[in-house]
Amino acid sequence: MAKGDILRKVLNYVVGQIVDDPSKVSVTIIEQGPDEVLAEVRTGPGDLGRVIGRRGRTARAIRTVAQAAADEEGIIAGVEFVD
Image (cartoon, rainbow, N blue to C red):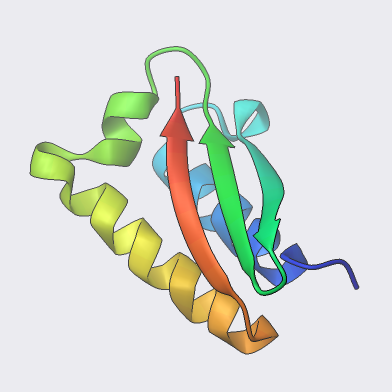
């Protein structure tokens, strides 16, 4: 299993449940060190605001869930929402 595979699956599922068009969600895992990754989450047009939420609350919750998934793999994860 590749590094960040669990993280990618969890982010795809969670973000896919929030957006209007789940088929447009893509998660790219970028290795930043031996035990650190960055997940770039892309959504369809108009869905980024739904993912970020009011005052960033939804984004913060997604980052918390992502770190819990990364803990299963023994890595540290950052999540970036890309327009």
